Amino acid sequence: MRESAGSTLIRGIGELLTCSGSGPDKLGLRRDAAVVVEAGRIAWVGTSTSAPDADRSVDLGGRAVLPGFVDSHSHLVFAGDRSREFAARMAGERYDGGGIGVSVAATRQASDDELRALVAARVAEMRAQGTTTVEIKGGYGLTVEDEARALRIAAEFTTETTFLGAHVVPAEYSGDRAAYVDLVTGPMLAAAAPHARWVDVFCEPHSPHAFTEEEARAVLVAGELAGLGLRVHGNQLGPGPGVQLAVELGAASVDHCTYLSDADIEALASSAGTTVATLLPGVEFSTRSPYPDARRLLDAGVSVALATDCNPGTCYSSSMPFVIALAVREMGLTPGEAVYAATAGSALSLRRSDVGRIEVGARADLTVLEAPSHLHLAYRAGVPIARALDLPD
Ligand code: NIG
Ligand code: FE
Image 1 (cartoon, rainbow, N blue to C red):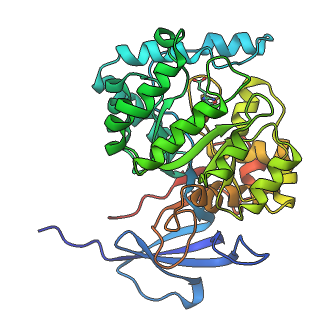
Image 2: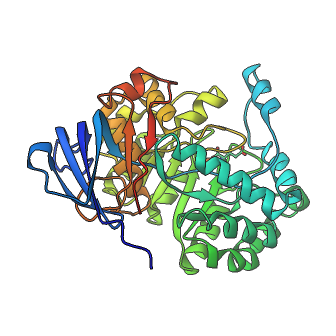
């Protein structure tokens, strides 16, 4: 029989951000802190001088520690390469979702083992940059079998799996959109639901490939009836109905939120955290688009999350530190607000309270910085200073 690993005292934490504070001090910043971890959970949090004994200890030598990043929006199950599409965009082309079909063709052709290896490499790349929880969507299969397969593979890596059969209307259904929505809400949902926690839809009237408000509503209502939680891709390419639809249906998250009206912001604020605005500034970077007005959202009292949207089209970056740096440099968040949105904020968007914060009972998902403070995440942009802390089981 394997012996239990017992408790581990993590000391020498120069700066600890718990992200579990309440009121104005949501960051819960402590200096000279220590944490005790036992059986994969946080067992104690306090100052180094009052730390209890433990079976072993790890000294972090003054480094900063924060909750592991929660990347609440990614599309990791894909094969193929779209770097030329990126280069064309940098030369002036606009993004409209049309390139998704290229990834669908390559993904359908890949074997299960090839897809599994691609997802494993991307998840490892995330962990090496401090991400400890990841949501993974399907959406590059767009047949009953291929969407079920994508979610089966995603579920090998995370419990946060999302059915995205309504990513785009695939070429073979371009003459009959209604038939594709029937497929998504019928047999495809039935095959996907056992492997999924969430349903999502690309609701975007500015793309001929994506879904209208009525189509998106049908997909979300069917997903909810099948027991799935709701997420929406909305207001990415222009103003649109995605945000209002997400709030109306009580979705946990509406993602992108690049083009928002006053009414959209009011609706999000009045949802009081039921619907989180998930911002994906890596997408604006990689599509050369204007950044969302994060400052306005925060000032209006909207719950905001940050995520990568790691995908082959609009942002092939797995880096939460990059996203944090963009949020600070381009969207006017303070470094503390950006860290909070990338941890507790994105945990809220997944309706999780056991991740994204460091408090007794939460999962022992910790990220350590090769730096004395969280300010370095944006200050040292592009330098690999964040990593998930590996602890004994
Ligand atoms: O979140 N907007 C739709 N879906 C992805 C992009 C997918 C792709 O281009 O492959 C996104 O940006
Ligand atoms: Fe996305």
